[in-house]
Amino acid sequence: MFVLGELIGSLSMIIGMIFKMIYFVLVIRMLLSWVNPDPYNQIVRIIYRVTEPILAPFRRIIPSMGMVDISPIVVFFLLAFIERFVMGVLFQIGNRIGN
Image 1 (spheres, rainbow, N blue to C red):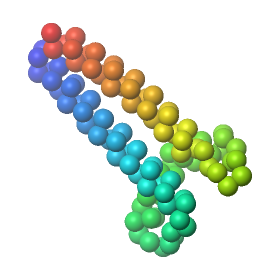
Image 2: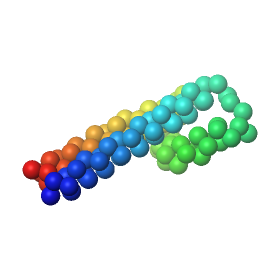
Image 3: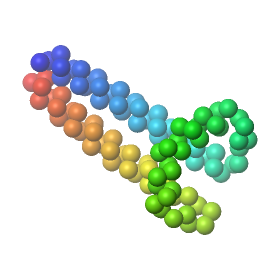
Image 4: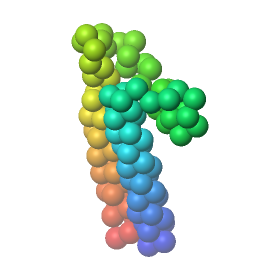
């Protein structure tokens, strides 16, 4: 059972890294929204393609406040909540199986 507990611990680390990458890309997306980048730049297109499926549902729900789009902030808080919940559950499962 120790091996299964370690496997779940490793899985939680991988999931944590995925969340960190999502946070990083969202921060870049927010910074890009301030500077009006070249829409034909390949890196900009990739960042928009990765983040748009995450942000689009929240943009439909949350009204725009003038020039300010608060959907990335809401997504940040929601992702932080989901990350803490998932990591906590995986940590508890790993501890119970490992002991």
